[in-house]
Image 1: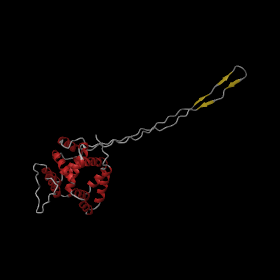
Image 2 (image 1 turned 90 degrees about the horizontal axis):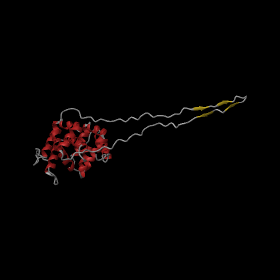
Image 3 (image 1 turned 120 degrees about the vertical axis):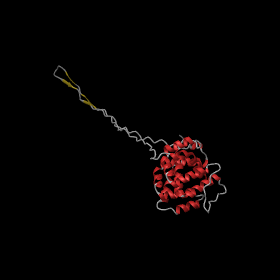
Image 4 (image 1 turned 90 degrees about the vertical axis):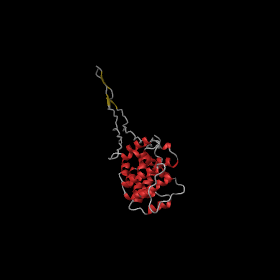
Length: 270
């Protein structure tokens, strides 16, 4: 949780230029389809050898008629399917604002627009941006303020307050935007620890779990569950989020988590 909050804050600050991204659909990727050439068959026509010789005398010599049949094995020429190349992670340094912002607008535009087009998510995004200033700009709190944890930096504490105030749905939208950028733009090989693992994990999910991501992302209850879990600091909190989940949220979230975990090591260096 702590590391993920730091990541959300760091990446959100890099995406400052994306706030003015033009409206419109996400850039569509292009796929390739391999088609196998039709098989070819080799066949040899049968040849017939016949010889007849006649002497001027009364006797006629007739050689036996022989038929030579040359057979050729018929083999279908069917190329083997070529395995798709392994997906690769991005090539941006986390500190390279221009690279991250450009990549994000190229491959994560729909996720960016989904968050920044929502008033609650956009407010959370701007609030988190304020947490990156020196000193951090803490959001206003109500009569029951959210307490700072003993080992929490002020910037991380500020980010957690922003997301808690924004609520689960806005948090899920902001997480979705950041997860896309982390998984598709950052160079996982230049990161370390939990952040490197998260980078590889999200890269695998982006490459192999599109169906599961769309299913959860298109379900309000699943988004609420993801946002709820994202704000948890312990297992008890996560279990409570799951127990209180509505509809098919728990099932959809579990399918996405299972797919993500199964493909956490699928991406390789570019």
